[in-house]
Length: 213
Image 1: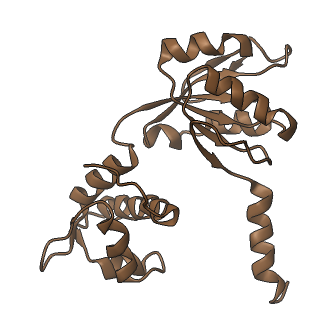
Image 2: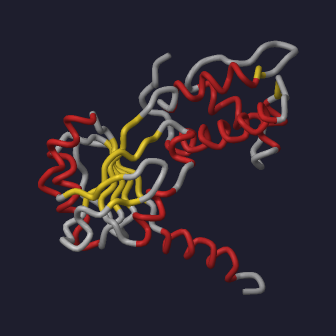
Image 3: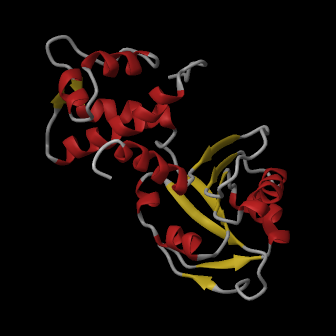
């Protein structure tokens, strides 16, 4: 099944929410779900659910709704999580180490297989996680990316270093970056997703500011 161009980013983000909810339903042995039920569980309308899924095909069955296991397979295929992805992580500070130890990535098909830092005091250390990984020098990145077929990178580094590191990651052959640094990376020939924790907190404080905050 193809991934049509021009799909709105919010619709793609909601696919992940649908998948999480569908997996929860499957865990409770529920075999079918209607667009109304799926939408209500996420504070969305049934029309929004149908519209989002219609970008990628027709998945419903008359009189049944959606078959849960069948839709899980289709959404995983659309999101690309029906296969495994090798991931590298740059930055072995507190956040980097916490992400290395997170076991939820592997359940979704993302496997952190390499770690890098430019701090001589941490290079050569073994970081615990689902699989122990030895922290490597930045200079070894291109070789490791090629040998382990790494396509994705996570950056947990200071803002001032993020663009230079992103350039090096791309030069090594990576084509997708999850950036935790509080800075916007220049556009490049790759997919970039940003996670700025301060921005998310600002959005929460905005919602509370008009209330009892």
